[in-house]
Length: 415
Image (cartoon, rainbow, N blue to C red; front, side):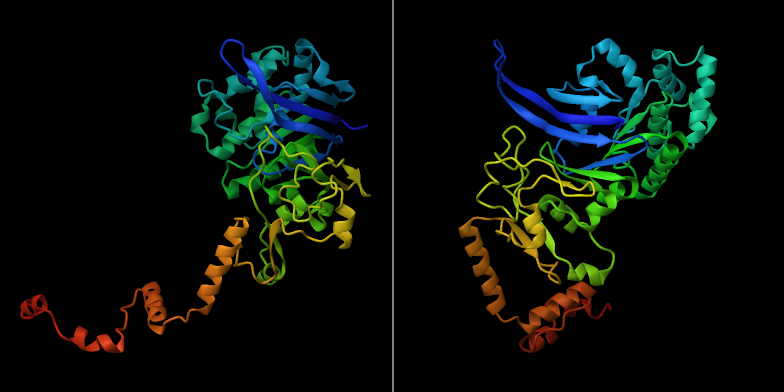
């Protein structure tokens, strides 16, 4: 049995209009039917572009936002239906590390006050002295000195403040920690330190993580299982290595193709899938498959009318796509809904405009550029400007340039 189970979780925010009657005129479908399981001691990574509902889902697990429908089961108890008083007792077992370490810490409280507040609320420690000793132990685990207790958040660096946020979660001895973009606000050198710290704490304390991020490299490094979200829905879920080795969903394929490869030879050979258009509004999501408006393999039969379910293809690899098997086998062809940059052509990015008129104008402009001969003088001038060297005049300009101007003659004796 999984430690944390989400069954068809939905979070819909009402859109209201009017001052007197405050009518509900629509909804924002931030999370729309997410189901996933997190095993004890496991790290589940949740990725997706901005606005797909990752953070809202994490807050819904902690009941920081109201759940419209669905079940959030922690160790056999449905948190979505718990009264507030009972939920307060369960919240000790679920903690969150927020994205902005400075914004999540009260600037008027010192570190001891910040860390002991939750302990006192949940009855941890007989007195303040006992709580202080517990806090010192946790600070040592996260790599902070004991003298940090009397200091304030603004006195620490970004990485140290994130360690304080991790310590605040650890003092309550939780079962599950939800990490919302835990390293996105930090420098790259500090990111590795925080990630390694999270892994060490997991090994020492047996923690379970739900890591929310948009950095694919970070998620791959820390996660056992990865779920890919798009517009409030889970489109693919698989073990970390399997997802990166062979993504099945068209959206995941596009995400993986955007990750640069440090090997120039491999980078030149691989193809990139450039999605056209913007993410649709969660207040008015497309019918059928949420991704069909941008999908390179869109088919006219089911994509726009029937919403796909998350189907297990084997070995825990789940995909929400009607034609995932056909795409993998090569029987379903691309329909041109996205730009495919061929291998070795990564420096040429097609225009994002999709109308026939725009395509015709682009083709005409490219033809003019290709047919027009390039003047040698312009090339020499461009190269000279790059090297900051004087430009050699053209043959017809030699005599004019050798003849000095009147102002130059007046300055000549003084030189």
